[in-house]
Length: 289
Image 1 (cartoon, one colour):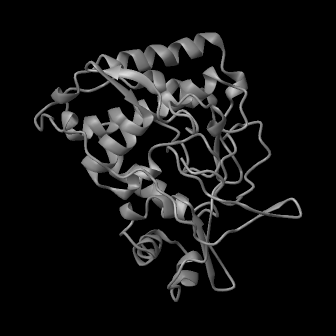
Image 2 (cartoon, one colour):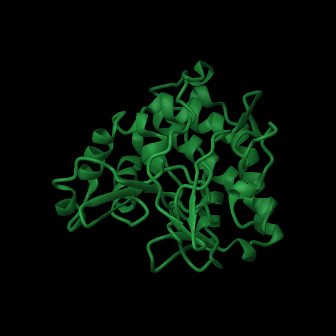
């Protein structure tokens, strides 16, 4: 997301967990252009090309993090991914049901992110792909990457002007993937018109119970910076975030959260989710997007 920064504290070359630092994450402001839908529509979008890409290049790690074998992606599969995005761009969104629209926007966001990373690979972090407009812009999120129904769209548009404000569901953050190790996993299969509820519930639980999501050590709660940047989506307060974590916490995290009333620290790892990486550093915030 654009513009704001998050400070890291360096001591002896190591990144430490920092106290809460105020920052401005994008608010969810609906783009009314995309509110129209057909509740009776049976139209389905073909996401098989995206499914094939994920089957071939998504690599689940023993540490619970899904990575992408970017280096292995050949020209033919890059072209197939581009053709998939082009096909989505020709879709008449208003003719779809809400469920089909959700699958469309999430898959488009993730495929666009993948295409963008591949176009600039190798990169240590998606933040290094500085193609967004603006002197101090970071990453690709503000760049117009696709045109749908005559509207040029950025990743920020899809996430903050369509998905978040229209669906008003905090689990959107577990669906879209920013190609960073600290991000909720890119799912191993596309979202479809059916079954999204189950996928979102599983994705939420998987992230909350992974060290990227939440950890409690000596009675102190450390959470992903996602819950800070988008606190408004998770109840609007630390108490709302903690309630969200408790909803999805499995043992033993659930027991550790029982008496927690405040968040001590936040962290996020912006390293690229590359299958060749050595694993997450779980470093503190870095630069927010």
